[in-house]
Amino acid sequence: MAFSLNNFTWHAKIALMCNTMKCRLHLTKHQQYLLNETLETCGLVCNQTLGCRTEAWEQHQEPLSLYETSVLLTQWKHAYPALSTVYLQVPQNIQQVKNSKTPNYSQTV
View 1: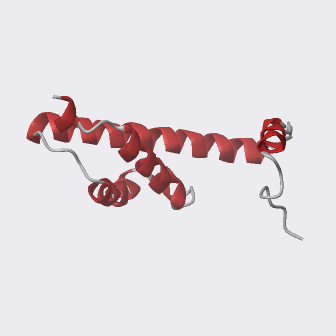
View 2 (view 1 turned 90 degrees about the vertical axis):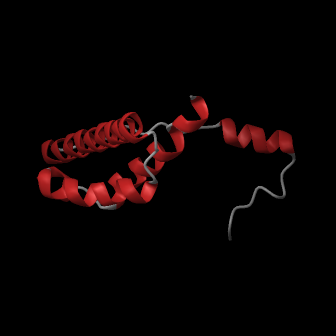
């Protein structure tokens, strides 16, 4: 039986959404290492993407598209071997977030 919020009033829906669960993870040393590597790689992709987008705007007054930054991600995989150790979807998701959160420079100038 699937759980659906359609049968609840809006008061009950709010009460259900406000309840959260806390879960403490007890990671092994190897899992801690992998998690730290993944977070460092995410930071690298985030900083590289933002740097390339800023540089492209400063030099050409044109923003980089998501497709162009995805092509750069393929090039970075050869330069940074750590990118090959994380799931492929993780760096792509970071670039999508950066693409949606970075302001369109042409509208702000």
